[in-house]
Length: 305
Ligand SMILES: [Zn+2]
Image 1 (cartoon, rainbow, N blue to C red):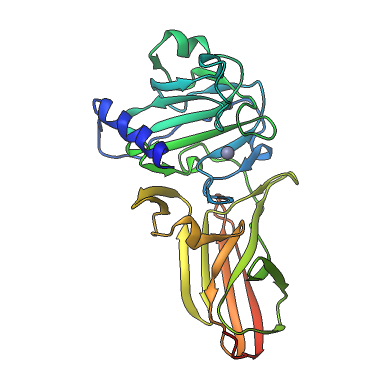
Image 2: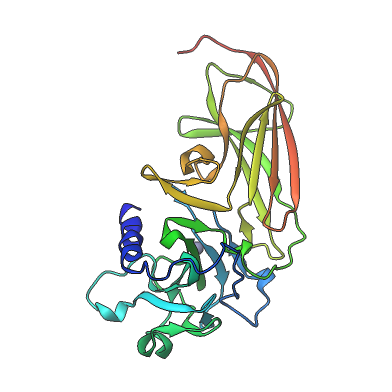
């Protein structure tokens, strides 16, 4: 991650010339994949858990489709396996980065084949110009385009869905199960369960934003936890920024504050004796909202240590 930031900071020094041109109006971008049925192809959203870090872009399932620049801009960087045939393949595969006005940048990952002529021969691209072809290079299971939208030359990364023409999504997030983690093991806690605990343990919630296809198990845009009637934690996954060595949401939460063992972390909670209520409120990228309360009855707190 540190080298990732360094990469952008270096570029930001070089390309200060693309400074803000107007009052910071929200730009509108084009979809990088066009002409396909996008609602069924968005397989991962921004801010999801990727084991130990936030998913920093949006995934569109597709292969050998033209990939288009979100906006006009110029080619900031590109790297293709053909550049260094003896080098081990990088996780991001073949990539292209475009710089746009007002400090926005966009990156396109896992591209197929070799550089498109627009990238090889030109410095500037128009909105919608082809910059590559979607593929399956790098650490990618199944052909897809992972694309990233950044601001401030990459020091802030944004959920691209906020800036793209809306896509239909009528299915609210599914708040499925709550788990208590003790060491490496975890147990599903059903609503109304009685449990014995000796100290605070992490409580996680499985939440997915389902799509029109079963394979679409996506992350949510906003989450809020209320513990025994008191606000516990609330964040949006709209953006992440790099702060004191960690990527954090605009609400100041790092990955480890929000996820545990690949699930949403309600918290490491001190359950009181008697009834405890953990309420979860989640919204997806189209604003569909779900909420669910879990009641846990703690019948005995042993004096474990
Ligand atoms: Zn991705």
